[in-house]
Length: 302
Image (cartoon, rainbow, N blue to C red; front, side, top):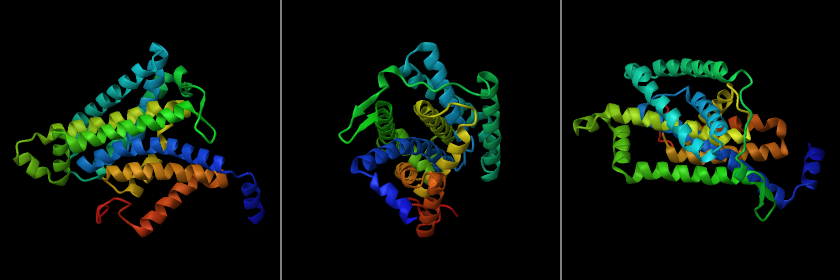
């Protein structure tokens, strides 16, 4: 082990560490965005959406497809979350809503089954091998960030994620609709007494969460293979992020997403074979210290 570490340390430079850290932030941006949508749905509806990874996958497919048809990345970036958000609205209204009040198991099993329906649908439409990932022309190449050359698209990914997170924060913290969402998450009965149609709030929150999942899918598509199974591993990783951050905490989802991305990236630098395991070790350590997660409330998991 000493020889192994010595070999790594010999070629280790400050620039390499900074590049790897920035790579981790770019990876964590996808985790943060996906976990944010998952967190919104759980925090408001108390629904564990096991189809969230499938909505991510659908977003990636739709993004690549629209880009191929129109040749305009910005158009596909707008249209894709509208499609996945609309699909989320239909899912909540006709599949999830009849199961409210029956406990966590029923919607969990339903969304688990829905994920496989969406996977098979993409297989039928686009084939088993999926679609080749495409980087927009204007975002190809690298840019000098002071300590090395970093891919332009990954810098765009970080900036786009920050903008989306700010938009969601502004919606929840600074608008009347956001006030209703927070009040509904705290006490749904009070919101009903005040005359708010809580069913419409649930509908829109579920749709928003699925739109964010689809948006994260199209943003991630240039950095990974677009295939029907791509949502399965990232679903597990997004649940790790959600648990580490704290169930129902949007801030926790963002911070934990970035943390998981950095841990994965830095582990890949020193111990590549342990990179997949590292995020689960992180989750175990956090839960041993804070069972409710970094920003979760005590008893949230109980």
